[in-house]
Amino acid sequence: MKNVILAIESSCDETSASICIDGKVMNNVIATQEIHSKYGGVVPELASRAHQQAIAAVVKEAMASAEVEMSELSAIAFTQGPGLLGALLVGGAFAKSMALALGIPLIGVHHMKAHIIAHFIEDPKPKFPFLCLTVSGGHTQIVKVNDHLDMSVLGQTTDDAVGEAFDKCAKLMGLPYPGGPLIDKLASAGDKNKYHFNETSMPELDYSFSGIKTGFMNFLNKEKMKNANFVEENKNDLCASIQRHLIDMLIEKLELAARREKINQIAIAGGVSANSGLRLRLEELAAEKKWDVYIPAFQYCTDNAGMIGISAYYQWMAGDLVDLSAVPMPRMQF
Ligand code: KG4
Ligand code: ZN
Image 1 (cartoon, rainbow, N blue to C red):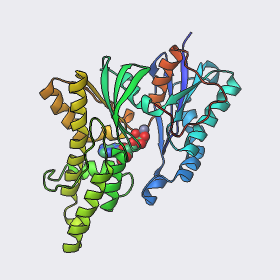
Image 2 (cartoon, rainbow, N blue to C red):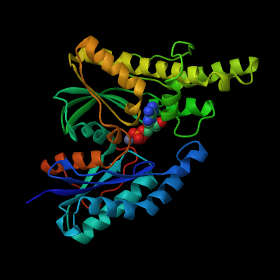
Image 3 (spheres, rainbow, N blue to C red):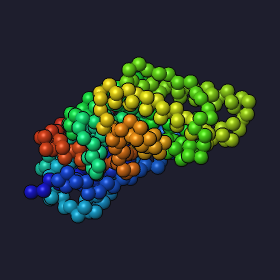
Image 4 (tube, rainbow, N blue to C red):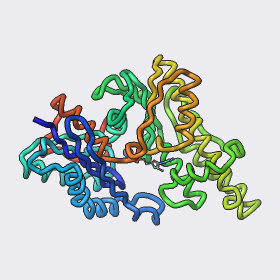
């Protein structure tokens, strides 16, 4: 009998559903919430409401495009955390209602672990053990992955996430939310070595991104005193320079971790892994350091239910299920 999992992701501002059959992700339907761009960041209450409006249609589309009937489902998987409480509640309640109505098991998935396990959706797949630099709007971690269900955090940010730093620096330049992809785009036409900003460096494998944000803000304020149009006139160079700084910070610790752990299987995951500068840098390092570098397809970098489906499949195989009393965990432990 086939194992058919319906997976639901609703931790932040993407409502997504996917069907995973015997460990193969069949589709990945994503409804992105546009409403937040005019507020310069995700507004939790609006995110919950938008999830409620989209979730039934998104699930229906995933089921229809995979030609799966309700009666064929083996389990329902959902993002249990970490994420926004109200947003997690929508996906969780929807998953629980379906599981209860159909009398099938529930699988609660850890969002950040799922970003990593997204590497097992398509070939080439990393070999264990590998290191994964997980970079999103809420997290920045270096994770050692021993197996699909066995991983530990070697280092992480002590304050802001790198995605947040991208978005806040973009906001300081007047770019709309989410600014990360826009910085990426404008950076391609800029000089990455033009400007330098003060940053804070952390010991060992940890990160701090609040210092560079302040450094960038102070730099802009100083320059704007001299020329009110400074940002407008130098946007591409500013984007290229801040992107280079953030990538340098990420890579320095990743190189240290690879050296220490003697691991040359290197993966990246999470929304910021869509960044073209970071991707290019990793490809250069792959050649230079003889690393095998794994970068997920674009659609599996940012939030998506495909990664929830593939994680749920491995959890299912290990009997790692939850029951109807499962609650959303905004700060779910790794
Ligand atoms: O993983 P994700 O979709 O959601 C979270 O779980 O946070 O990551 C979203 C983050 C945002 O901060 C967004 O600006 C950033 O990923 N991002 C990028 C790019 N695409 C998305 N940052 C830099 N360059 C990109 N191309
Ligand atoms: Zn994410």
